[in-house]
Amino acid sequence: MQRQTSQRTAIETVFRATKRPLAPQEILDAARDEVPTLNLATVYRTLKRMVEDRFLHPVELPGEPARYELQEAADKHHHHFRCGTCDSVFDLKGCVNGLSKLLPAGFHMSGHDIVIYGDCRACNA
Image 1 (tube, rainbow, N blue to C red):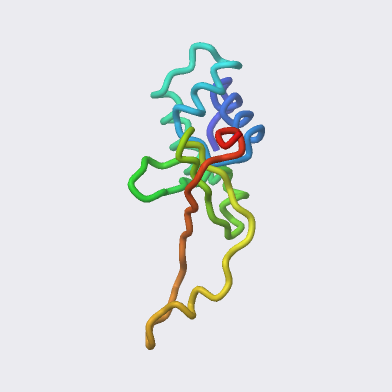
Image 2: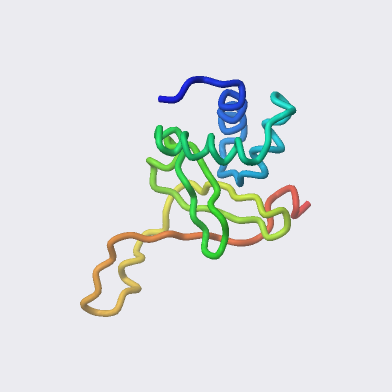
């Protein structure tokens, strides 16, 4: 466990407040409210430590840089929604049943990831 710095505290506060996967730039923008001198390099170093400490989990979307979410969210199977207008990513509750029925005969599914694309409520208004 790393020592608790003002930067780490600010980043933790951002994740607890937003409760959704965040890109490093989103984290920087929000955490600067508490630590105006925070920079992107510090955000990346802190994210790396937070993943190592199992506080955060990387969220990989096809063709995009990683975003990060609380490990407690990642521990529960879920999927994601990505807004095509503002690029925000949101957690989706639940899962589609019966995906294994889509497999060709003799295939075995070991897991799946689903990302739904569209516009979020704010962008759709």
